[in-house]
Image (cartoon, rainbow, N blue to C red; front, side, top):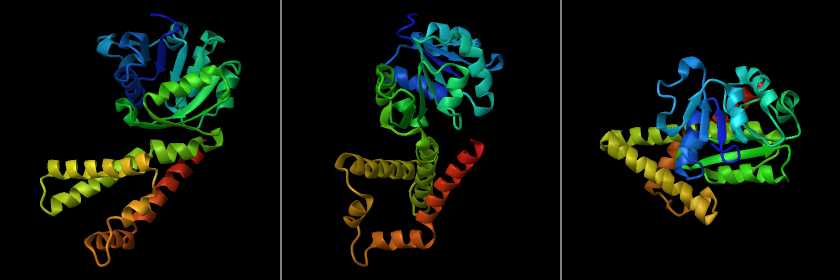
Length: 267
């Protein structure tokens, strides 16, 4: 395993494993060049499961890999950073996906001499379709550009000021669950009007994908695309108005703001 071409993911939970799978699926890293750490009770029996290297020792993983991804829960972040601090050198780059822990807080434990980034991906990173917002302390450095390019291979990226990281968490990271719930609701509606559950989900998911692609590819506004499928006294406008009368847009906006408020409270 080469130090230069290896990456350590500290925390092999859902998002940590999604990142690992995405890095492999995109051809960015081979499994054997990815070390994933977990606490002893969560380690797989086969320490090379899926071709990855699983281990408990975080500091040891850092000594073997130039890029370190911190993917643990906020409660243990300080202890993990304290553990790996002696192993951090100026050759390292550190990416944190931990909610509520600032770059300054990370730097105060490790060092401010290295490139430290905060990235907010979502679980679609596993299939290279994440929306990842990234902030950093050295945004003009080649190391930061390398981090952005890494996440570019795993979906779309947007470089933001750190002040907007919690907003990105609510809209992008939490947001994938909001849109999945919308697809589920549409699927249930499809089942109620006669489709089998699997067919209803296919129709709902592909329709949602098509709607998103219209905006991403054509750079159009949602209302412009809605206008194209609504006619006076038509069935589409009737359905839209019924949803709005029952708080569809309001509920989604309130949910995003609620998640943001919750993230702010944890800060």
